[in-house]
Structure formats: structure tokens, C-alpha cells
Image 1 (cartoon, one colour):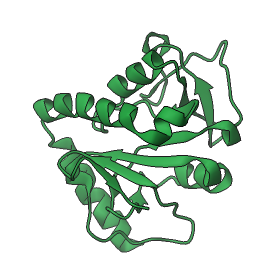
Image 2 (cartoon, one colour; image 1 turned 180 degrees about the vertical axis):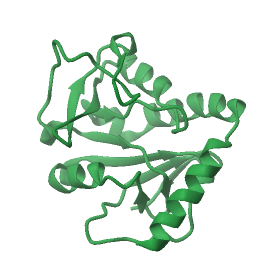
Image 3 (spheres, one colour; image 1 turned 180 degrees about the horizontal axis):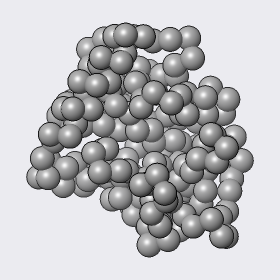
Image 4 (tube, helix red, strand yellow; image 1 turned 135 degrees about the vertical axis):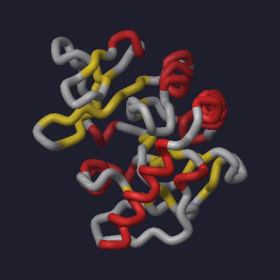
Length: 190
């Protein structure tokens, strides 16, 4: 547990130092790789996080998936659980009180999580074999533990967020793939 906390703190500090040019380049790189992914091409319902300031950006991914006529869902926190809510355009997003953009409360269209085909997951750091450290709340691990057995799980991060050895707890859920720049494109972990 101590090693996880230390790794989380170090990686969060490093992630804040990633420059604007790299972030801008990552947007198009990630969108191209995601739309080219066979699981995404086959999938109909895709959950994508709405990135915050320092996370690997997802705005280009969301736009590309909508353009592909995919049913795009974004995670919202309700009663300490992730609930997938339909997003038809990023223009629908409003700033929520925790500083996260999400669809407005009125008119939210939910999907049962078991109908999701692909989930694109944020993280503080990942290993090349799919292990993940999140922010520490366990929200994605609980969500994926309950519903993720039939979902293809893609971790999204900058190459600076790839760690060699990530400690795992029994409740931690591994990704099926990790997408990071400069790590041979898509890093397959299955």
C-alpha cells in the first residue's frame, strides 16, 4: 500500500509537468489509435472518461467516436458509483461542482453497464502488462469488478505514466490494453 501511494504521488507530480505540445500531439495520436482498434470498430457502446486538466486528453477520442456513429457514454459519479451517461456532443458538457465536466442532470440517458462493449479508463500510472493505479478512490476497480467481464478495457496515458512494476491488490482490475505514446503505439497486454 505504501509503494502504491508513493508511486501515485511521484507520477502525479510528473504528469503535471507534461507540456502543451506533447498534450496536443497526444490528442490526435490517441484518437487515431482508438478508432483503429478492432474492439472499438466492433463495439457499439463505448464508455470514455472526460479528461481533466492533467489527464491524457479524450476530447478528440470522444469527437471521433461520435463521428463514427458509436454510442458514447461518459462516467458520472452518483452515490459513489460510476453511472454511464449518453453523450451526443461534447457541447452538452457542463462543469460539475468537483471540477469535472459531465452531462447536465436534466435529461440524462443512462445505459446498464453490462451493455458496454469498450471502456477507456484513466489512471495515474499503468504497467505494460495492464496493471493500473488510479486516484485511490477505487471507483473504476469496483465498476470493472462488477460489470467489466465482457468489456474490453483500454487504459489511456502518457508514456511518462508507464511504470515498470505496479503492486496489485486483490481488488485491482487489469486492463486488456494500454495506449501510451512512444511505447510502440498500442501496447497489447493480453
